[in-house]
Amino acid sequence: MSDPLQTARRTVLAAGAAALAGGTLAACGGDGGNTAGSQSSTAATLSTSAPASGSASAPAETGAAGGKAIAKSADVPVGGGKILKDEKLVVTQPTAGSFRCFTAVCTHQGCLVNKVENGTIDCPCHGSKFEVADGAVAKGPATRPLAEKKIAVAPDGTISLA
Image (cartoon, rainbow, N blue to C red; front, side, top):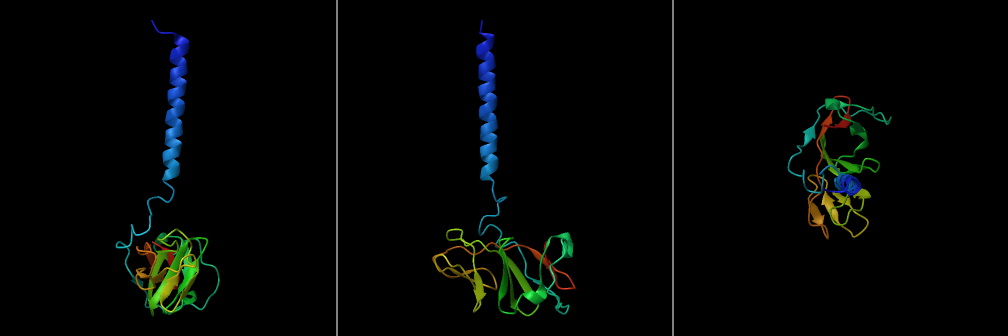
């Protein structure tokens, strides 16, 4: 016959170990599976034929397609882009009326990109550069493209996550 105190102790230890393992696994989930490159082939380029809004006001909470508004098309230069540090995103406009969105986290070592110029999205840490048109590596040491995010552009020029 087993000792009731020993059985209770085993039950508490087993429950604690299970809770600890569950918390550790949840913590490892971190970014919801949005690792660099995992979505690079799933998002499409979105275009708008509406004139760009001249408003520099902050975007509304929700925008086109019901997603979170992140920028205004007027704030994204043609051939360049706009870095959204808080969202860790970069929105580009490779050609007039064509908008793309990528993670602003460099695939080399996780630094945030800091500028968009001369057709590339640039990382300050080790010099990696990515193409504004598709997030592809233009210059290493990064070897994987920036992960693309789906966006929608409303007729008023609001750019939202789709």
